[in-house]
Structures are given as C-alpha cells and as structure tokens.
Image 1 (cartoon, rainbow, N blue to C red):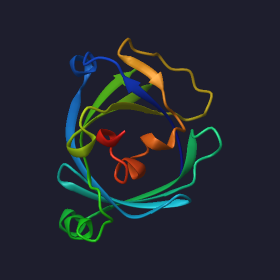
Image 2 (image 1 turned 120 degrees about the horizontal axis):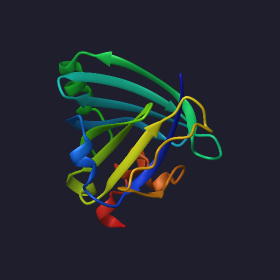
Image 3 (image 1 turned 90 degrees about the vertical axis):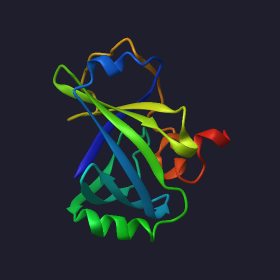
Image 4 (image 1 turned 135 degrees about the horizontal axis):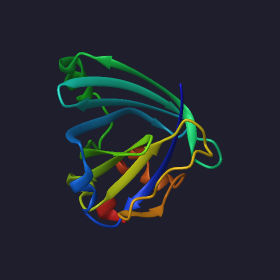
Length: 155
C-alpha cells in the first residue's frame, strides 16, 4: 500500500514508438487536502476510487489505496468532484523490469507530458530512455491534484 514512484518531464514523442498500449483517463478529486487526496478515475471501461496520503520528504513514496468500482458509479462520483477534471492519455512503455507510464494531458493541461515509473524500492536502478527529460519527483505542481486546481496552461 506504499507507492514508490519517480516522475519526469518528457522531451520528445519518441516514447510513442515504444508504447505497448494507450488509454484515455478522466479523473476528478473528491478531496484535495494536502495530507490526503481522494480521487475518482475512469480508465477505459473501468472505474477506480483512490486515496493517497502525504508524500515523504523526497516525494518518492506515499500511502496509496485503490479499489475498482463500477464505471457508472465512477461517472456519478465525477459529478461530485471539486472543480478541475483531469483528462489525459496514458501510454505504457516497458523498459527492463519496469514500466514507464507517460501521460499526455489534454484540456487545461494540454502541452504537459509527464512520465512516471513505479519502483519496488526507492534506490532501484532503471534504464533512462532518450526521451526522458528533467526529473520533477516531489514537485507538487506536477501532482494531478494540483494540476486540477492550477492547470499547466496558467503557469
């Protein structure tokens, strides 16, 4: 239930050639409190409810609990979310023992492309593809909960 991940900007579209899948994601936040967020997500034909805790000092790990829910219930819950729904397309790129998830944002966050890699341990070593840019792990402005409140286009 502890999520360990690192986040990077993406500097080219070369990741699309390596992607094994892509899926549209729509998500909103029932709660964006800095110490805990409650997210509703629709990914493809599935709905999810996720609770995330506060990140550690480095921004690499935090508590995460996720439960799959009925997609129709997820659509109903989206209506209750705070203002600022996130829309993005997620590409999955296998790289060695890991999978990079590259999110191409639309709507108010159009132009932002971010890659995340989930790790087993904070010190795991992984291959860095050429399209991977500057690391932004722990930079709160790149958290989806903040992007829903302060979109990329307003920076």
